[in-house]
Image (cartoon, rainbow, N blue to C red; front, side):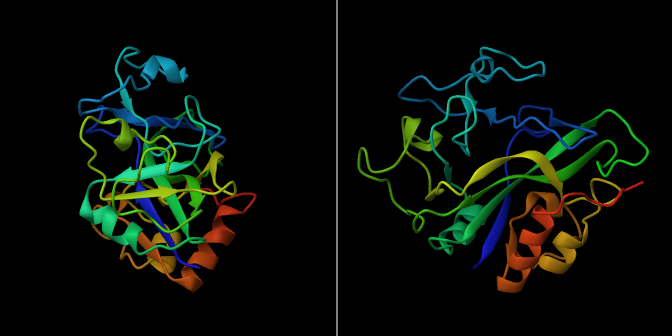
Length: 226
């Protein structure tokens, strides 16, 4: 089984802030704003009923979707950019696609494993229900996805997660003592060096790395970072 982790969700570029993470690892998944015209009404920040201040009337690009999240009923993801679309296209049914986000720390505790200021964290995962799609599906062939709602379909790849997929209740750390520091999940398990802006790059895991990542995700606790 192969695995891939990609960066998603709100950040300091779009919409200008990150979602929060609390000292117990609970977090808010905050999508980015919708930047393109849509052929139908899409959810707004207000529809998501987030526990943070957001511009309520701003439409969001709700991607990925998680069945347990507001305004969602399936696990889907689409991407128009080759840097993510190419490695996603290499996955197959049964492989895992992980999603990570940069989150800003709220609260403080001396023994917490939550990175001070901000850090990168896994926030959810898909087990692929089928091979990725690399062309627009026929009407009714694929669940609702933000790229299908756009006036012009622009996704280079679409994926659907099985019922084994999930949005986490507790985030899973990828950063070390500082947000810019990659922990061993990145430097030892993935093919990434952890140098430079690693938190923006796709992280690829071979069979051995995917197994180690699975063990990390399933841990009951993480070591403190301070």
